[in-house]
Image (tube, rainbow over all chains, first blue to last red; front, side, top):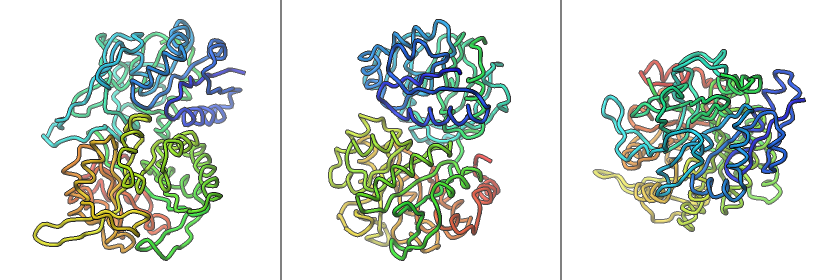
Length: 218
Length: 256
């Protein structure tokens, strides 16, 4: 039996993530116990951790700080495979421009920036914000979580802010929406996605399956 | 290549069954929402929208259960609308597995509810649904919004309303033309264009799709980011795949 903790800090579609990994676990015939939890001990003992997120970063960080989720994530990041999703990924960065500026966990070097009011595509047409829908992800380097996921597969995104890391070597996938942005960042035992694998049908479920089988080594 | 335009099948549900009305009346049964959602997902739907038209309290419990079942089996975004009035309603639907909620009447009753909802849950999960009916003709058409499932006029201008809702934090506008809904005559693309060009958030066109070209016209003429349809898919006139192939053939970027 392997255990997976989905960190519950009171925001967003935690149950969507849990349902998707349970589904994938069944498909792979894994003995998997998924807990949606804010309990430090359960998280500390889990074999792998998902740090999900939707919502406004200020409220997320307030909850993270209130529940000491940051410590749990920091602890998990020492060793076990961690998957951070969307605002979960943004929360790992040092700082976000959202809500007038919010300090984040600072576990990955970089910032979270707004797309801007005047975002335009290559042809000059105005782009909508949030960036919402299915966009292509170019895999910029090999990673166990990309195994069996065709390059340039479409994943589901929904966000108005995007993460920028100072260390280019960490970017594992990019997408284009007015500008090139990090769609996935990988750092040792952490894999973080701006898109929602749990909502990205086949490609997303494949990535989640890869996560369930991942040792945490890149 | 970049972001794809979305095709969203819509399930109008009453007491746990998919139904479809014509001009907001005349209900026909179109199946089990979980089965229907799974079929659409397999055919390549980009999202599923579930509109709960159940009025009764017992029906609401059924809805929460159904949303949970859909979310356990369908791994694409799910929007739930109908009777969303409080932050607790939103919390309940998100906990059941919805990714977004659509707010309609409650937004008109108290526009600051949209602001509070976006602040609490994030703009990305707050869709404002707007039922609009043309109120003035040439040379400058105007549209008025209606509440309570299209029964109550409000005197509010649709374009101004959508701008205000996006300013308040709506992450998306679900725009239904009451004049076209159920008619199979195609979207009101003047309405779509008027709204889509005046808000920064994505707009989903709804109401009136009868043939596949109507979906393409929503993007090409209406300038919308996503197109929603119900009956052409429910009664298996067309598959989602056929709809996407048609749109791709018209030069529209879609997820195939």
